[in-house]
Image (tube, rainbow, N blue to C red):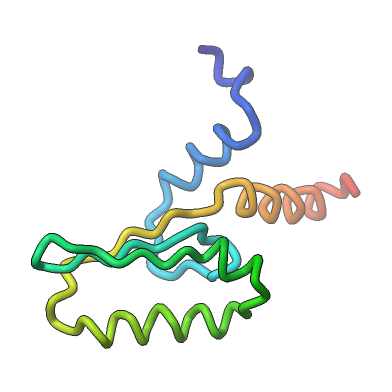
Length: 101
């Protein structure tokens, strides 16, 4: 496949996947899965929360409360990034820098 033929989401997905992420604003997350030692997991559907009017600050609180609830049993967390939202934000900022607006 010619890289120039990739779709908008595919191009930004490649970029986002190559970046080490330590902090991800709730605005750019689709869902979070908290993996627990006993092979269970808890998923927070961030997309649904946002659609129901839950603020990013409240989503952060829900995430941290859930981590606290499971404590030392948390093995790891998986963040599923909203690639389209991140791509739009980056594209908007890039357009500003290049005076394309």
